[in-house]
Image (tube, rainbow, N blue to C red):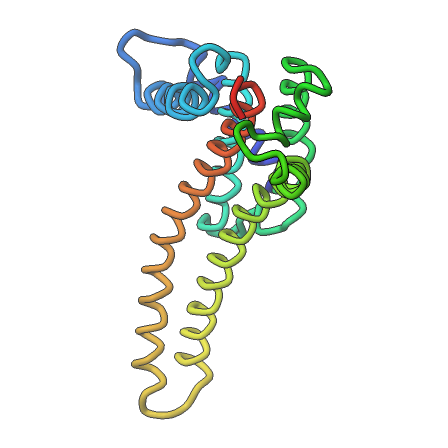
Length: 229
């Protein structure tokens, strides 16, 4: 919980400070803030939601991307060294309490109650008999599975990555300090080397997972607003 609150403070403080005195030729802080904003606005929201409807959702997409990214990166910062979203409750809360209500709300508001249910569960062009099987599957996917799989993706990646780093680090420490035998200490070096290598891999995965979470969230909103299934 402390990491979640700290992430909120870091993100809010950074964007407030970097945008306090905007310049035509930006400094490093303003440049990074503008880059992240442009990436979330044009690289995610506009691409997934569409140029007609994306603007109201830019703050949400930017917040989701920034929040997930910072919480993921906590896994590599000394002292913290734990990605917050490796606890399943946090990605579930983001998915079920933030993303899920937003994209269904905008869908119901645009298409109406019956129209949105039809839009989500009755793909056009299928044979009539197929709908007996297809409609329940579509309903299960859109209203039950989507928010759960959205949360599980980032949770599983963060949990597995944290566990891998822990295994190599603890194994290296054990082989170096506790284990006996002629090959224990040389093998400990290999274990520590893999821990360092996996740290860089994990950093890449943490950024990718923040991007994936924001992209899928925007994609769900775009699908709810689209005229086609």
